[in-house]
Amino acid sequence: MLNRFSRLVLMGIALMTVFAAKAQNPAISAIYTPDPAPYVHGDKVYLFVDHDEDDAVYFKMKDWLVFSTEDMVNWTYLGAPVSTETFAWAKQGDRAWAAQAVEHKGKWYWYLCCNTADGKDALCVAVADNPQGPWKDAIGKPLATGFGFIDPTVFIDDDGTPYLFWGNKGFWYGKLNDDMISFADGYKEVPGYTDPKSFGALQSKMDWSIGRNREMTQYEEGPWVTKQNGMYYAVYPAGGVPEYMAYSTAPTVNGPWTFRGRIMNEAENSFTIHGGNITFKGHNYMFYHNGALPNGGGFRRSTAIEEFKFNNDGTIPFIPFTKEGVKPVEKLDPTKRVEAETMASSWGVKLDRKDGKDHYVTSVHNGDWIKLRNVDFGEGNATAVSATIGQLKNAGSIEFFIDKLDGSSFAKIDFGKANETKEGRITGRDKPKGTHDVYILFRGGDEELFDLDWWNCLQY
Ligand code: FUB
Image (cartoon, rainbow, N blue to C red; front, side, top):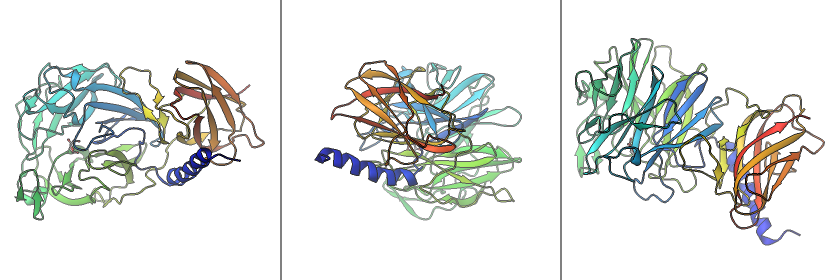
């Protein structure tokens, strides 16, 4: 007979299975990830995001996070390498707002925004040798300050000239020097910022931040500037709050910009929508955020992704929101080391908030799980699963399931000591073969169990 607690856990797992089977949006579920800024580098997408605190009831943002993927569905957490503490001159523990990073001539530059100690909006830049850092303040002071100086987007033109665009309650841009940390000729307002032909007529909306209707253009904040086939694109949250996503195009980086309309509706359960688009492995993706995670909301936002195709004339179509999100573009090889913090979705668990290269799945409790998609077991030759944990708070186990969380697991490993590496034999008549989703289910008592480090399949 199952006791009441076990029945509740199983019911919870069943419910979550339904949720997990359908939802790939939000794309990251173990931590809140607003203001997504994806960056394609070689065969990976790096995702630079801000971080809403779990208990936020207003903007409560202290650090910035990095993830990467090779397949668009399994995202690996690379840590929290930059925080307001990176900038000694900044207001600490608050206003770690939207940002974007880029690689240029072997160095990585992360353009961020925060507040100065005396409360001014400021753009800042951090520099590193790789996305995981260590990152340091590149200039030891703000790159620029001014009212509405938030949400920088960096864009490198075909001729290698870098530009920075930014702004809320204004839209500014400036050419950067090749050092990436100074402006070549200062900065100025984006031409047409106040012209409805360039950035859309505002359909009379209340701007709560100023307490009256605003008669500007639809451009609100969070620009994302790219170039395709000789055409410059500025995608941006539009229309005041709640924001939708709109875009404008221009034949040169200096304009003239032409308003092209709405491409996404207001985000689910979030009055902001900040994001941007990339092309990766032949697919186009629009990133944005919503408040759709359990306990999510306008101040607890998560990255979501939709695939889209440019129209033949280069315009961007209207992009509907989906729960299913995007499809995998690669298979995941389970015989190689799989970091525990690589996952397509999860329930219950959290990620450490550390910098550096060694990361863990934390806050693990009975009934929590991790899901990975498109895991390729090939001919079914795996005979065991090995896994390593970090800290141990209480003994517990992990069980591996194929495609869904019910039925029997194909491997189980018990852990009773910190930093153990242990193996579990692959059991069952149907050894995993071919490509499947994998669930890793945590089992134990009522208290927190252990931190999971990594796992892989073995062939003896
Ligand atoms: O995340 C804080 C602010 O909310 C961003 O800087 C804006 O773009 C909006 O998403």
